[in-house]
Image (cartoon, rainbow, N blue to C red; front, side):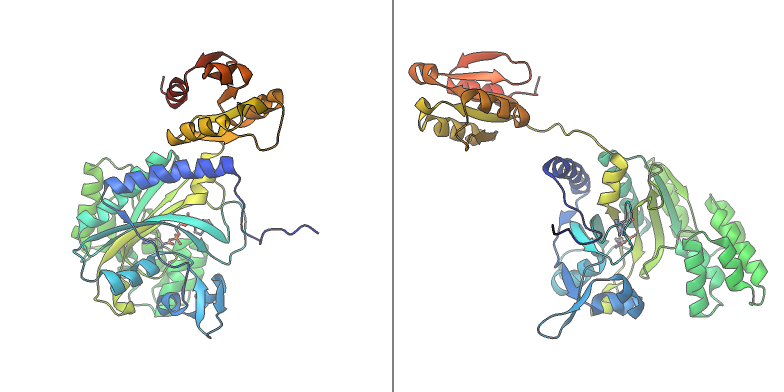
Length: 412
Ligand code: HAM
């Protein structure tokens, strides 16, 4: 029996990896321009890191295990908590705000389907130690720019937790949680059911539904009145508009994770099915839970695999490749020529199978742009024959000129 990969995981062949690396590079470059620098945290963490804020319920959704030393550990389901733990341990004295980014695989014990995996990659940023509308807006602008650079089509929605929280402040913590879950799923039927037994439950359903439907700050404050976060929400909207971010306001966004405190935002790809959320983030406070000061932070994580599904098939520009094609007379000359091409940064393969000259050229055409032929004639002249495998054109050239020609391929 052939062994299969574990459920919810994927293998990636080289073509797919090249596509992934290309998109990853564009995303990295975007956040670099905003000043975000990469960090790396462990793939597994103490279980407490995630249960502290979210409770034991989250264990169901994680890859939890006990190691040989009896420690309760888990594969990371996300990276924000790890980054904040690292900030508390190592970054406390660094000048704030800190701008960190990561590209990391995460693990969730979920029912797999298209766009939902048990191992998946997140590309995220965390802005730690700035508590202003400018900070909130910077993170949304960076998300917008990054998705644009990745080339996906998306719908960006920005909200804030304060309006909903102000409306449900009088409910029990349990019921508040249930209301938030209903809003998160946009399940207004379940919302009505949850609040059916409450005093003025029907009015509350009406206000929550109205808040969920608000598309401008003015409409919102007409319902909620002047909540303390009014100025912050207004300022975030002004900043996003001034930077021409194409976003919609949506105060029904409450986010699944428990640590958000203020602004929240999500992006959706319209060409994906049920799993169409390609990015999520917001402002949060976690550092005090891990033994640090109560530091305001804001960040997002993009679901890299969903972005790749949304982009569909495409061919990467790729860099030119060469195959050295030799007859036995060439002796070590083939390896010397290969070394010269590699020294110039060109992907270069040599025959390892003892194939005939013709078979080597046929094979080269499958993986390279050029064949560099060294037969008896070339050994005598000291030149190489450079064959363009796309056009079939071939010429005798000095090695240096052949290297220069392949290096410049694609520049025209
Ligand atoms: P999240 O919404 O749980 O947020 O995950 C971020 C993104 O990861 C989602 O929008 C989705 O695209 C992708 N994602 C989640 N689960 C899966 C899965 N099973 N398979 C494929 N993709 C998935 C967070 O994780 C927060 N840490 C984001 C954040 C950073 N908030 C502040 N800073």
